[in-house]
Image (tube, one colour):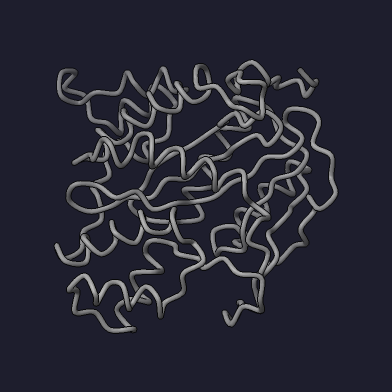
Length: 279
């Protein structure tokens, strides 16, 4: 699928991206989207917050407000809360959360507590993160196999829709086979009807992080840290196409070359077996 995506090019073929994607049977998400925009000051704050989250994910809005004002930003709590939602800042702490959940949304229990993950395609973890760019920002959705740390699928977009996540997940299942369990947070994308229906149709067990359980999805949080520190912050992109190409190269490196200490200093590809057998 990734090889076919690299073939999409409207600069030399004279064929629209829509037509090329139809012919190649690939998703258009991320190939032509332009970054979402904010004011220059808001973009500076968002970049600062995204970097700061990797250092101090336990900071709450009061501490963030304090350090931003110390740096000279004239920001109030209402504005900060909105930007925290954009950057997907979820303060990590063991106490009770004050967020009020949507009572109408589907919620499922966390299934990974005490579970021994000993084979590929047993458990996948999914999440969305904020990606800063030179002029704006986009979102990255990724799917990781917990046994091997292999990234089985990913996509970028300038909006966080459930349909975008479902389409990317369908591609991963078609390419790598279906897992037994998929774990996510309780975000609206993962409590949506189309997401729940996809998993139920494929007989995939649904697992969701519990409120106040910061470590439930730790493996994909580590992936975000690696992606941002090793690629995103070092290579700020201007367009969605440039970001897609850069991430495509990074994830190839991550899967096939980058050693992982927990995997005996071997890359994930050496451990990933889509048949589900242990390496």
